[in-house]
Image (cartoon, rainbow, N blue to C red; front, side, top):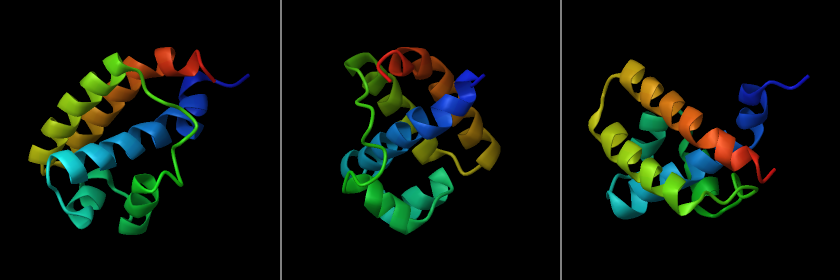
Length: 103
């Protein structure tokens, strides 16, 4: 049996990271380095997300993107890893049921 979190790790999380990276770099003006530090991934990973080489299997809905954008804004202001992690998990929980319907 595959639990929802396990399936989300392979599909939803990469799509979320792709869109978080895009919003944080292109819309909020964070550097790739700042974004990588906030998301706990490498700058190379950020580059791959921005080039759609990762996280391309799921397209998030308009509703999910609205939620994601407000989460990106909060994450961009946080410096505490625990707060960032809590925001990320909350976002994943909110959008995974919708996103996994299409997988």
